Length: 435
Image 1 (cartoon, one colour):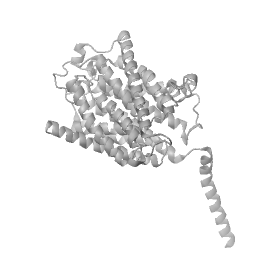
Image 2: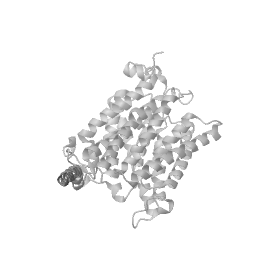
Image 3: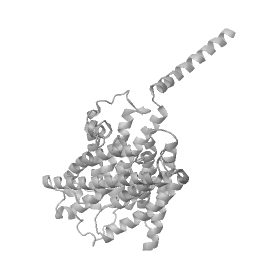
Image 4: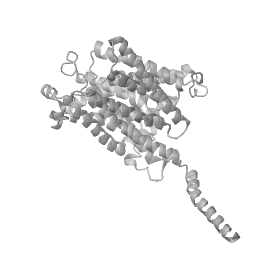
């Protein structure tokens, strides 16, 4: 009996050793399976934001004759950027650029030549980090689509997205997250207020001004053709944004938890503020208003999500809901700029607000993570302002030049008859609805 017990005990010890050994090896190698699982999940959530989230949100906002064109643009951008990210995108954003490293990475990692099955980025496989960052690179030019919706040639859109990724997104990404000059200055941009939202918003409004207004704007009403579709897409954006912001902690830790909480609070606050502002101004709250307010709250909290607390989220959400509402009306009704789907007043203004407010609300007195040692609030706000001005100026100039080059080579805009008929038929020989 005693011998049997000893044998059973030895078996249990052996089983425990076999079970624990892989964990010990992983710990020694630096790989954290919990972090890896969370970033894998976050990657799927962020891609879900573009397809189908943003695709449906945008497609519902345009007229029925252009619904397929928007879906096609978001889908094609996803495919195009994925290949460009493999060829040179990841390398230019996150590799050492040598003597120009402050401005742009190098090509040492082109075609992911240095990324192996075993290579790590912090505590996760580098393959996972590559894929996570790719989803950010995908959604940014997809957001820009909203600025020129219903009037750009499909071929021109492909050229624009590829060149804009190369000239705008990759350098700014490197400046902030890849070891560039803004990162060296101590800029706070947790998940892309500058890298994603300000670049997309600025690119969209420049494109809207260069291409000109849609035929009939602003005299002819151009209401969303399917708000049900847009609300469905907006709900997917809200859920996917948890991967966008909380995933940017690149770990399953306290920063990720706080980022998820403040993301939700900012979205909810901005939605209500926009709804009440619209209710007061126009007499009735609209479904379009409340979902647009949600997007404004999400975009505004993005740069600050890993640095502020719940009070900061309420402040950012409230300010974003009101300011982005006013900006949308001012750009459309006063300036008469046809930013078709309000990309700049929602994402651009939201990114600016969140980036600047982060420099204040990061302080511990407001429940934030605290300023870096030796940095005052005034110094941090100044760094944040420098980042905003630099990214805004670079994106505006680069976008304008890219559009002029494309105008010369292949043209930008469909002709008047094609615009009247709709891009679904004229660009793709298909219709979204068969009625």
